[in-house]
Length: 426
Image 1 (cartoon, helix red, strand yellow):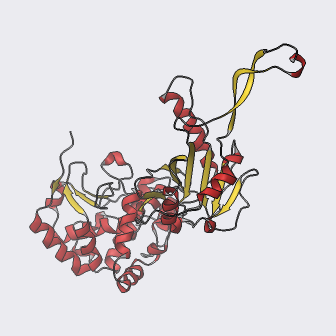
Image 2: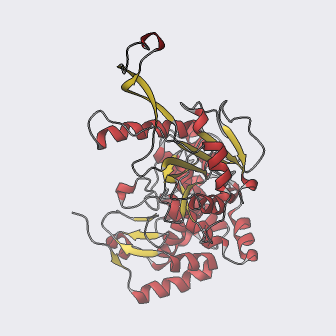
């Protein structure tokens, strides 16, 4: 049975904060932002993101912590912080050999702490047993690599040079929520970056210089679903010219569908008065409350991330008496949103094909939630707010798709789809 995490005593928390500031103001700021706790979920130490209010949780095994000298405790805490700041969770996620990625991340962090933040490795207890270039590559026939490379560069070097890795990690790197938290929780990672960006510009520039090559590595967004969370600043409900859109683009009635029923007789039966025969007829399809069902997609990819506040406000402005709105954001993954809660997910690449896939998955899910054999219908209206740059998509009903563009790039809009410009609606 897992323990209930216990917090670090207040006096010890404050004393450690003062010591961290002697290495850099950033470390104290993040220490006071996070939540330190003792937990048997870890054997040594870990930093994890969670969906709670604070973006960082510093977890320590109590026995491990109490056996560490004071200097080593400071080193371990700063080590955890750099993993989070340098986005090692996302960066390590794409590397095939997880343990090698962990070693590579520790090499990068340990040398940064020594060369840029004033730690002396010889003062650490058992420093020779942890990850440095001269302990990891000590049996390599090639020259020992430099100490200022990136996680990715060390990873490739370890694969190329090292048959055996006989070192210990300073901490534990968790990537799955089941482990009590994760280094790749998008919402909290995003908030951490916000906290750092709120520091003085001179301090931010100094930090970037100290982090060197590691600070310049960016996660490739082209085919990655980042799932970064962002709140959306509250704003007045937009007054949008939806009337023209509804009248001219969608029409006054819902789309047609074919249903079985009794139809009027063909002309050749005109002599048979009042004859009705079974057949296929068309009828207008409405939701139960006579509104049209609309799936409203908001593009929150890296290239369109800056528009998220306007996107969300625009979605909220759709007239409730006309539309039953299902709101989603997307990068290379679709994220279901609550139109009443001002927040979005995204930040990665852009994939339009997944939008149609999501609609088909809705239909499949619908059959399991209602009467057997029934399905959620394809939406009456699909609106996609985007900059237009993404991948090809082939909708089942392209005529129901409306592409609300922030640019004039419409090359990927499928035939039959309707293009609109965002500037005409604001």
